[in-house]
Length: 393
Image (cartoon, rainbow, N blue to C red):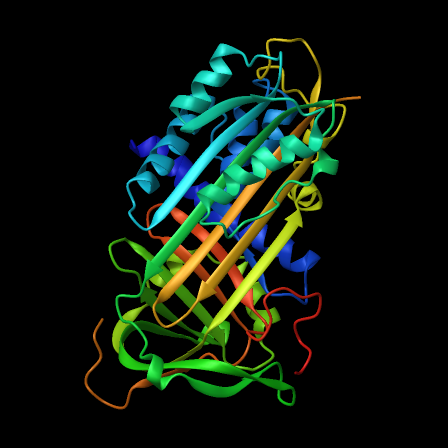
């Protein structure tokens, strides 16, 4: 990636996850949140390739996705370098696919950029047979996510007016470089605030980790590395048991690297709960809050997509994500679908630092040069999916 592409993409890979996470937290304030910014951004990037150059649609996508250039070739090259990089990662699988209504054809320029730059396959399908079409799409997503993401697309979002479904799927399974000893895991309290708590399986380790005190955030941070990759999990733990909301407000304005640059290797007494979390959302309100509302309206200009002269807009952007963290490592997956419709430094040896994640915290799985794969918070490790995470057992 040349310097110009790098700057365009580095900005986007930094800003977009923060903005996306903030909007999702606002809309989902009381549930365990897990999402994949790179999955959502890739799906939106494919939409951008089909937007008319210079149109309001292209402008909103560029601004909402935090691109610093409107040059579609530079953007496509940036996506290619990132997607190609992750394709070489042994612990990660990412795939894109475009489903097109039978008898419709994509314009050559659009199909070329999707196959060559987004590494996407194109398949024709009859959306009027909605159940069969949904099953086909969902089977593909399931196959790319180790069966962790099921039923991404429901049949009721597809019909004879559906022209295109753009899908991104991502699956990550990483082993810790420093594994937790299963024999040390025991039931301990996880606090929602100073009074409410629940029992969870708490993992223990005392080892060298990258750690930082963050007094300006009233928090502390710890990074755990994954084997055979340049991927890390960063946990940011507020000092107060009920401090996650104020921490999240500060993080919205803070680049990830301004926190990771403060990390130093030191001995840490670490406790982290075992947990699974699953999250799904229809992202229309999120995109509208990010200033990308035009894609859902009759004003949308996606004239570069199909050979047929037919107005297109987005009817749904569907996202589903899953994560499991245990003694061995982390398994995570996510998928995003956009449905297009015809309109109508080492410390000296001393007492170890203490990092006991026994109350709600923020986390991200990231690559230092290629952005956030997953970002989320843990409000209650005792539940996988719920509408209210802060209830006691």
